[in-house]
Image (cartoon, rainbow over all chains, first blue to last red; front, side, top):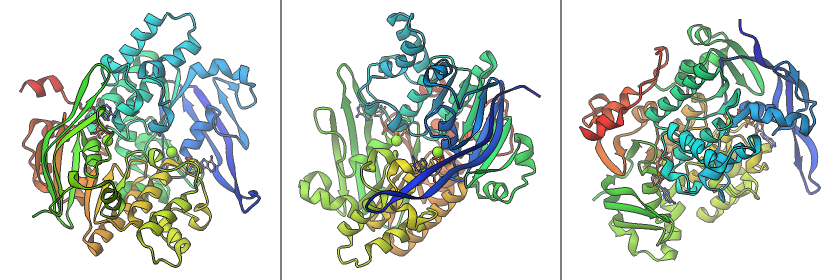
Length: 263
Length: 278
Ligand SMILES: Nc1ncnc2c1ncn2[C@@H]1O[C@H](COP(=O)(O)OP(=O)(O)OP(=O)(O)O)[C@@H](O)[C@H]1O
Ligand SMILES: Nc1ncnc2c1ncn2[C@@H]1O[C@H](COP(=O)(O)OP(=O)(O)OP(=O)(O)O)[C@@H](O)[C@H]1O
Ligand SMILES: [Mg+2]
Ligand SMILES: [Mg+2]
């Protein structure tokens, strides 16, 4: 057993639904409805499940982009839900997120270099611009793009290329923990493999911990040590990757595995 | 004559200090009722090819395209702005690769689907009912409640399904679906593909399906086009291309598909240098 880096206990995120002329709150979407799990240090926890089941919301709640209704989150044995903005700041360098929607998460007015260098500027203010440029060039190369593209803007890239820019940005500050939300969904199978191998190499070298959200069950099986399965805001099954695939317990997991298109 | 014919299509982007040749002279056709899958490398020109079909690319001088695109024998390049607007949606509808790029953040999803319905089916009496049916058909739970949600209040996969519902509400002759199921779990993915298959059959709709998912290609497409660095390196019947690929890129790509239940140490990637030199 490894020590856990992240511990989530009974997490709930409920969004108010407003309607009518006065936009009164008359209902709630229970996006995340009481989930508990942990991510072991240096390991990968796969998170799969129904579209709309709350996967992204869990990731966003961890990095404080979604409002927590109740529950607790411990990172490296520190309770982080109650931290002030300043108290949370040092953790921003230690945890990063690769967002599901690259189009929305890359600032259209910033060049690729500026996008990757921004977190470096914030967390390594002493780093020179030349060093930032060098680091950005190295990262862009590792995700299969070219340093000659650093001065281009997000709209000048394909969907899969934008997705890789988001990965390079998340890796820039050498975080310990990365929430990867559908990080390879827009990539062809070869580049997808290149990115997955890169994530695994970094894990080997630096002991990174991943929460890996994806719909591609073969990729999740390959990269994960543990797997969580969600539907309707709840975790319906959690086990080691081997166990879930070899011997699924919940009806939903069985249904998922059966629906994988065969080729 | 095919429904859609593309001849010697070239697309170029002029940046500040470099020119990207995104598409380097490709040819393909699409028949009525046929599903054509477009697969290939990330960045190989699939999405820009799709956009060029109704002249949705950025204007000159940023982007220049040449070649011939014929729909029912009509040259797309000869159409007026008005004719083009009529063509988009009604004749050729899109499911764009990134939903957030095409859903309007300030209107509810229900409103946006309703607008599409009103535009394309003018006589419709019960627009709201139709919107709710459309949302149910793509598997949105609590459709009666959710049609008042704004795009940012929906998950990635729900936004993708809203776009699918919008494109289908137009009852197009040709559906261009650019990675339509990347944010969907496999059970909903199956539901969507079944829905498309049903509509394809009922209305003889043709589909251009851009995807990285070979499972979907295998179960759904009649023919496949394989793109690599702006060129079509191979095209043919789905069975032939998948079982017996001819081009080294296609072979190498298929060898990279991760398989459920076959644990590998490392995933296979393409050695591009040996590919380009061979
Ligand atoms: N800002 C918000 N306001 C209201 N509801 C929201 C908001 N964000 C998310 N939701 C709702 O919370 C639920 C969970 O969404 P989430 O994005 O976490 O799903 P997901 O599991 O990531 O789905 P997908 O696989 O489709 O990306 C959905 O019903 C969604 O509509
Ligand atoms: N507006 C633009 N300006 C400059 N270059 C562009 C622009 N749009 C696309 N490109 C370039 O054109 C090429 C083809 O892009 P396209 O979006 O068609 O790729 P794709 O095959 O759809 O890839 P993906 O599978 O990653 O979505 C890419 O190299 C991209 O960088
Ligand atoms: Mg999500
Ligand atoms: Mg694309």
